[in-house]
Image (tube, rainbow, N blue to C red; front, side):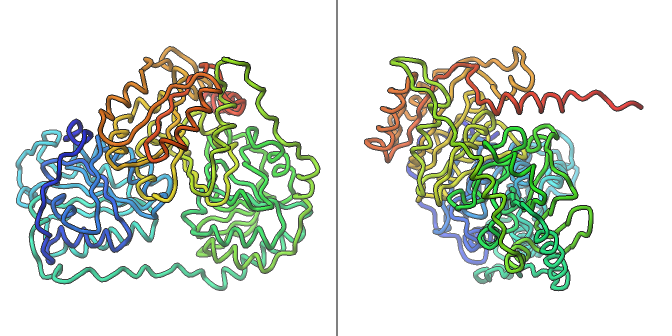
Length: 585
């Protein structure tokens, strides 16, 4: 990694640089990023990308944010894309690229368009037998490219000005069309070079809308409506690919028209409006919200919109879902039970058209309301009793509003945050498909930078925080006012519940002391240690009152065995799935 120590400290005044002249490759790339909606680029400088960074800094519409390491720069671009629709990061060749690649793989798994830009070798070095630094010592510069080919939807190696314009624009437009990351490597000696193809401002992209095959759409709607209109108690379940399908509005249309209860898969939380009168909670098999699993699994028809069924979301492959009862609505395909499948039918088109064909049916919703019993409230804490996790999340629930967003780190926060009821316009993000611990620190940085109208509330476990803690520094530099609840329970709790061992116990840190040292008196930052409910209430009052414009870091001490009941159930089922013996040969 390059410049990992210096970039995380307080920034010296930035030298004034002349504006990049229209006509250079660097200027074109900078203007193109602005044109697609990127305002902030997350970076780590290295000698192969320094001239390119000069051009990005010179672009008035761009803000270059230096991160403490490449992994966090990638996570920040991921979080930024979740709020803004597209994100970007810039690193150096190989040592930077292979460091950021884990974050890019996560963005790929979550269908996030992230433009990953790498400063590459001098164009004159391609095709020679020279060995360069920042490589593995072979005269082969394609190692990084080959690694990125599996986690990006397009790759461009720009080492020739004649096709640079085409390569850059093709890669960026592909990221927007496919909603996946792309890789762009730019030779370090080309950014400042003029070329006739860059002689004018980039013409805005026109991304042609994907239009469904009309005959296929009509057939899919007719077959689905016939299937559902015969059902007695159908339900709708939203999944994580609602974002990729750009179908959130159409999903609400279907919910309004049908009268069916709507649930959300755990990885889709935040994409389905929880203030909707038909919303019943999270469907997650054996660890569903109370009464939701029973309603979904007892339905005689279920519409899954944008689902991903993996071992985690299926609780170790234990969902009681029957294919013959299911309508699977994917971003570009609809499959009905064991019967027909209709391709080139796009999710939003399908849901809107289906809403017009369904008969209203509130039977399952009425059943839910009959059997529903409100969840219990945590037992009152005795004076000076150690704080319990369920009490913590009761008070986090009270903090939520339309001007907040929740970031949930991999771990028990997945399960506790699932139980939060999100008010209208409250954001929610977590990374369930890839599940990379430490993701939330960088993602919080990026999301908060994009969503300046919201105050981010991040719930992060101590084990995850130790992976990526440095970029608290960048949050302070950027003047962010996030509230971070650091849950200190002494280890990797989610892994303890899957398979325990001494490797799940971590060295305890003085977390507030670390953040105070990073703060170092520069910028706005406030920390607190919390061990009881009264101390928690005081800390929340300060964070939302006197310190409302500061980054607030609240270290919450809880018992190592204080976990959600859902994690206990989920962990045992995932452990059983992981531990299946080999099939007989």
